[in-house]
Length: 115
Image (tube, rainbow, N blue to C red; front, side, top):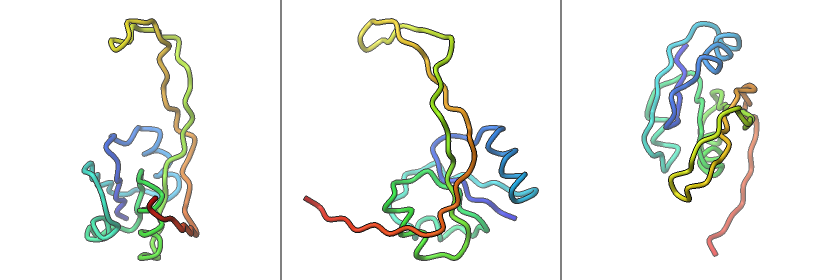
């Protein structure tokens, strides 16, 4: 089993553990570069595409493959840490992202136009 992880962030231990629960042991390959077309992803052989991408590219990807296309689901949670924001000099709360699960894209339809 080979999972292609398309994100600029490294996968967390929670995300990896959850993928192992879902798919069993797997090799995870990361692409951390900007993706502009689904073909850029499909050029890399994988059994599952785990992606953090704009919705139009996800729709294009889903149209072109029968393989699982999944995306992480997370919640933004306020931590106990506050720090100074260098941009404005104000104290601000720090937030962390907590892994909530994976979402399989079964079907997606998008109709857009440039304005």
